[in-house]
Each structure stands twice: as C-alpha cells, then as structure tokens.
Length: 583
Image (cartoon, rainbow, N blue to C red):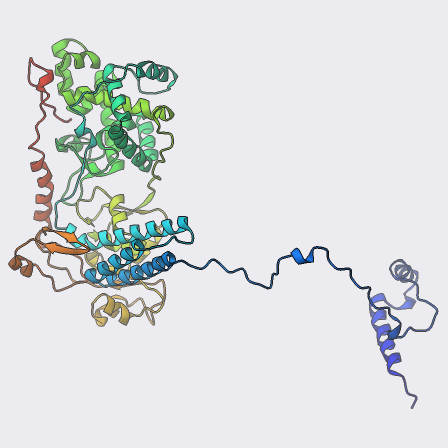
C-alpha cells in the first residue's frame, strides 16, 4: 500500500473544508468570480510547510502603563466604626423586640427597644457616613415609636378619646399692635395678589400679621401650614366643586391648624370645628364608634356647603365667615341693632363677640402671608406629603390592629388615616381608609377571618422558617386552634402567607392611671383593683363587655371639661353682654 505523509493528510483536510465553504469548482463562472473577488490568488509554488510562517511582531510597551489601576486588587469599603457597629446591634435588638411584641410580650419588647435606643445614643465616635447614620437612626426611632404606640392599644381603648387643642383659642380674645412700617408693604402685596376672597387691610389685620411674624406666632403658622400639605389637594377639590373661594382653606388653618381631632373650649370638634347640632344639620353623624366631624373629607364638604349657605344669606363673605364662627343668629341681631351689614363697622361698635371680631382678621392675615411667603420667610417651608388612601367598607366590627396586620403598616398610621374613629375598632359599614395600593391585599387577607371574629383575631405574615407550631408559640395560642383557623394552609406555611391567629375576647380592665418609666407602666391604682383587672389571655385584643356604656362616657367627658372656661366677650359690648356661641 502506498503511504501518505502526515502533512499531506493535513492539507488534504484543509482542502476539503475549503471546498465545503467555497463550493465546487465546476459550478460555473459565478462561483469563480466570487472566489476571485474575496480570496487571494493561489500561488503556484509548492505547498508551504508550517515552519514557513513568520512569528508575530513584538508589541511595543504601553506608555504610562505604570499609572493604570491594578484591577486585580479589590477596592475594600471603609472599615466600620464603633458607631456603625452600635447601630447594627440596635437594629438587631429592634428586630428581636418586634418578634416579642408580636408574641404578646410587651414588657420584653419594650426592654429590647430601650436597649436599641441606648446602644445608638451611647455611640462615642463618628460614623462612616453621618447622613446615612442619621437617617437609619431616625427610621429606627420612628419604628420603635410606632410599635410602642401599637402596644398601648389595649390601654388606650379604655380611656376617653384624646383631642388636640384648637390653636385659635390662645389668641382669639387678644389684640396685637403693629409696626406702621409694614402698612405700605402689605398694601403693595394686596395690589399684586390675586384672590377669589376679597382681601382688605385694617389695623386688626396688620396686628395679626405682626403676631404671626413673631417667633411664637410664626411657629403656630408654620405648623399648620406644613400639615396643610396632607389635605390641600382634597380641600381644594371640594371647595371648587362647591363653588366657594379657595382661600377659605385658611379658615381651617385658623380653626384647627389642620388637626382633624382638634377641640375648642366651646366643644367644637374637628378640622372645621363643628358643634354637634351644626354637624348633624350638615350630615356629620356622631355614634358610639365614630364622630364624622373629625373626618377630614366629610367635614370639608359640610363646611363648604355651610359657608356657601351663609354667603347666600348675607351676600358678603366676611359676614358669612363671622356667622360661621358665632352663628347666623348673632350676626343677624348685630346687623339689626346697628343697621350696618359691614364686618368692620360691627367690630368697631363691639356688637359681636370678641372672638368673632378677631376671627375675620386672623383669616385675612393668614391668607395674605401665605400668598406672599417670601416676604415673611415662609418660602423654605416644606409641606407634608398628601395623604393618599383607598377605602374598604367594614363588613362587621373590625379592629384596626387586624387591618394593620393585613396591610403591613403600623396601627398608629391607620389611626391617623381614620381620625373620626373614637376607639380602635370600626363598626360595620364604616369606610376604613388604608394606604394607597393595599386594597386588594387587605381584602384578600380578611377573607380568611370570620366576620364575627374580626374584632379580636389577628393575622400574621409568615416569614422564612415560620411554621404553625412556632407561630402558635409566639402568640401563646393552641396549635389545634391555629390549625382549625387555617385550613386553607393545606401542607405547610410559606413565606408571605397570612396566618390567622385566633384570640378569645379579653376582659377589659378599668381605666388605667399611672405613667411610663423607661418603657414600663407604673400603675397608681390600688393593688386590689389591679389584681381584679388582670386578663388570662395575653395575646388577645381588648374588647369591652359593655362598649356602649364605655364609649358614651368617653364622648361626654370632653364636653364636661369644656364648660369651665367661659368667654368674656362682654368687655367689647358694654350695652349688652354677648357670649360667643359656636355655629
């Protein structure tokens, strides 16, 4: 047999491959022209050997190569400081405290919360990044505060509802001097200001501008102005729909500083300060569970309609505003006595209550300053973000803590969204407001809880490593009860599942008296009363045996305390004593 050399076989293989890519030489002129266009001519010399290839040329060295970074050496982050370590341990303490809190161990949770704060406050050196450290510390404090507030729900449920003081009560009976030099300034501002509400200048208006420019008055003005951001879009929309001036938003600032739970000395309640009778007239109901005068949206609608009706009655916005404060009957009688339908004339003659005489100038002063913020150092004040929410109609008596579990937000935040609730439970038919975008999640989670159990039962959002056994231990409940309530969890609990936690109604203790000391409640009640008020179920929510009686007492308490201070507006009206009476 004729032998063939190895190089020849190699070149034979290359020829076969080349034939596969270029085609057969017998395909005609088109294939020939294709080869001649893209392939170099084949030399006539003998087949070259592999040794005939020249070695590649040597590359020149790269200039400044020594200045290039060495990417093989990792760039390590700065070494954490002692403050960073303390903050990390504080966050771990908070996380463990949260677990104890969910298990019903309030004392243990508060102890860990105190440790977390002490760990941060005792940091002795500067953190790696001061801005990041401050932000994490602020978030930690807010989270602990929210958890502590949620832990006080059982105690707060037995106490009368808390109200904020109406800011106008401090200045409504006072007069203030003004600097004559600001008169020309305010006059120029009025000429350049566009307003749906007529803006006029008087000595009283200038006096309140002077007061709100002072350190104390400016603090009050800025506090209300910042809170206005939460409700301004909603209020502006309603005022426009009802056809009243947009500047009437400052009536709410004067009345309450945009505090939905504000209460005046005359027992007027809410952001727009309705007394009970006037609130009922405009559809604001008061029940054992809720007071719609404290509902920002419903009260705004009622206030806009009431102001529109008063304007239709008097034909003047200043008189309408005065009648909103003291009642249309008082304004009618003042006009009849003097023959003047002018607020400034009525004020000068002292025929209106002193509070009402100052009411219109206060609103005008706030309006002028708010429309010219740069002139009064208000241009750098940031308003709070608008409150956005979805609405869920309660099918039965539902505790806010259950909604908080389902929406994964703090119960204190839900309470702020639902200020009209007197206690911490929403009755059937009540529109519960929940954070925007959480409606589907909450509705789906609540379907697992029987309607007649939503006042006491809880929901737990499972995490990695959770099981029905560990959850039952955490909430101090029986595993069999947990399994019965969670038949929808067929095999095992997965992260993200909502686990229903049954809890029997707890016996509500009498109203507690005492104080907190480093996270612990120090009771001042007699020992016998404390012993009788203990509950056998630590993890259960509080529910009164006689909620109607408890709530009735709670709603009456602020009214009794409001009878003590009496308006002495008769100083301004020597002919006849006139006492301010809210509309």
